[in-house]
Length: 608
Image: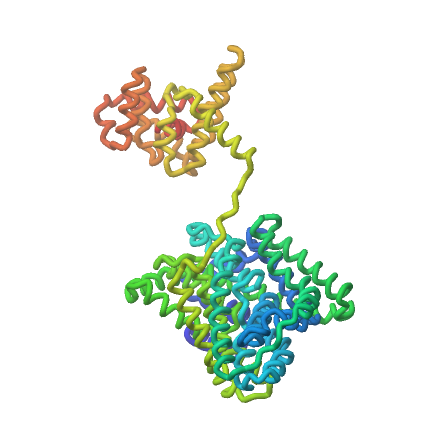
């Protein structure tokens, strides 16, 4: 039955069923195969997605629809005309100038529209005739417009950057281990993106020189007029990078300001479209937003199920067993991602594949920011990779050319992109990541220093209610693995020191209250206390949380500080109780029981 369901799900996937439905189906089938009850395996991961809107991912989730909307606003306006005019005035005099203009204009446009083919549709009709008119071969012009339709996804604020950052952040253990911050990842692709544009530009210059394409004359007046017209839109990506670098606003706030800015610019200043066009823009953009969110939410449930089934761990073990070199792993990763890019759109590929390979890449020491750049660059190329690259079909439909012809035309540009991919993959230094933001302020630092001074200046030991001593070294030893409890233990010393500064009649009561609060706070809760409350008082009965309380208490009762210290050092010796008289543990347990509720448990909390 299980295999029939799995085969049916695969058939649905390859027949074009909605991805979120396929992922929910995969989660359900996986829950059936796991040993626990179906409601636990399926309901648990599914319910976890409802918390995403209130966690750190909420900021990114607010950002994605806003930048998508900004991209649709730019596509509806005459932004493409102004960008091309400016780029041509700036670079058209160079060898291959108009071809470089095409690359740069497509990159800027794709930043906001994504690699969904909008760039080819919006700019292709403008750039293709211009390239042919300037004596570029028609086949070269077709390949250039098609090949650069996905360039730009590595520059902020491209939506795939946010989606990758969100999905990687959902891998909690890896994200915490590597100090992952989506806002830092936004800047990681800038240098690799420039390398990609540089490689494509070299092809354009060489082609223009070989075919002796004429250059246009540089005109300063045209550059001034075109830059003035395009400047309000050109400054958007640079402004976003600057604001992020300076920390003046978070990405969600920047996205909201971008949308407002573009609406005012395109509707009131340029007047490229009327308010009624907003309805069409909104419905199209919200359809894409809804699709992305549905897939992200169902992918979260699916990822939780994979973790429960230990799929990533098994994949790591298999890969480590068969692939022994980081260089080989990166090569195979590129091949895998190119294949994925052929079959899926960029958002589906990130959401499905990333949870599977993130842990494997970490085992080979691949920095997650570097992994993200490799991932997105591969998927950019995947849009052009035959036989099923999405942009090949969009360009074929747009320019009414056979897919085979479009594929052959794009081969030189695919080669240039592969060169850029190799450089970025094997030169990690190209993936420059902005330093982490400084957190806190001078007030917080001052409070931290004051707390340190208080800790150093406080008493070294306090006497608990049962007569045992608790010292700072006991805090270090007993709570070495629990930073919160260790700080609370130090806090007792600080509070007792403060109490002793009060008048004598208040100091004693204050100190007793602090110690009583600590005993109650540090006493572990045991479900069996009601049934076995007297068992710890019996000679020879030792609780798991309290194996050596008798030794410590009996030594402390002797009043010898040195003997107390030696008892601390030997607390892990299960046979130490045998060296004392048989009555000692019983007396110590009784003393602990009379001092605080919980008996032996309270005594255990007081000893190191």
